[in-house]
Image (spheres, rainbow, N blue to C red):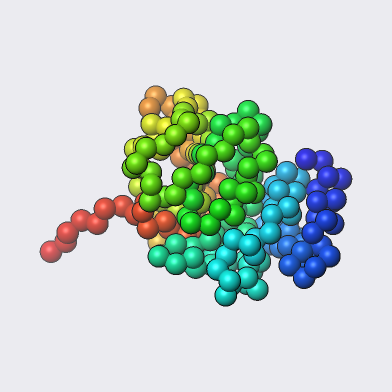
Length: 206
């Protein structure tokens, strides 16, 4: 997306109050956090974030913090989504999978940027993944342990974008698959909510 297309996309949603909040999200949160890629800003300008949160939180949809979705799940803050999308660098050649936290907001942001998109809920990973292998996998939340099913579903050389719990903090990471394993590189420290389904098994201590 060109800068002009981005400007037009923002203008198209800036009339109503939610649109104004979306513009403020882009100018005051994403840009000031170093997220300036036109395709990221344009994609996030197009999608009404307030349509993907519980009714009681619609007025808070654009604040820069995670919002509770219920069952221990959260919608990450806009800056987290912006940084994850920039790290993903999606293309029209991608066969992509997004692991959902129960809100399909990020899937709708990603959809027009890839060739094909499959959505699977985090709780359904072990039930099998259709249409694999994938060149891009995005997990809408943080992990402590990467499910083997996702490693197997990724193309050789494919990439995976997720949050990762690193001791007491979380960070956004980009993984690349080589020789049947995924090696992760840090992108940015940020507050990425942990997906309960991807917590590491707890060991007994005495």
